[in-house]
Amino acid sequence: MKIRDLFSTAKEKIEKVMPMTFGNFVVFFLILYFITLVTRMTWNNYQSNKSIDAEGQKIDDLTQELTLLRYQISYYKTNSFKEKEAREKLAYKAPGEQVLMMPLDTPAESVADEGNSDPRIKIPNQHLWRSYFFK
Image 1: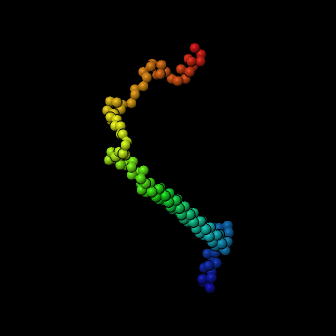
Image 2 (image 1 turned 90 degrees about the vertical axis):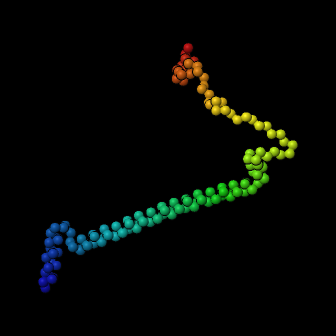
Image 3 (image 1 turned 120 degrees about the vertical axis):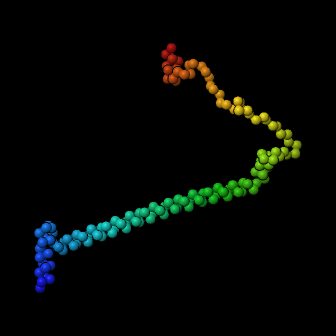
């Protein structure tokens, strides 16, 4: 009988503090628990789908790279590539062909042009247009 009285007094004290009954309180916490579980499972599912999409994109990229490499391999096996490389690296010349050698540029020749030193060029473009149309 003492245990029953202990539970009933605890129940009365809880009901004084809370605006709901003990049964409603338990149901409320069960609903919160299930909402938390569903939310967590949904988040884990979202993260899994996101990683699956990222891996699928990696597979697509690697497939494209593999296709490119296969095309390069087939190009490297052609006679035109072999002839081109022989011309560039071994100075190969086809029979009856004349090769013209051009001298290399010196560092002084390879410097970019300074441009036109006309003083009007330093004037902003909109001022040049205004002077063209109105003067």
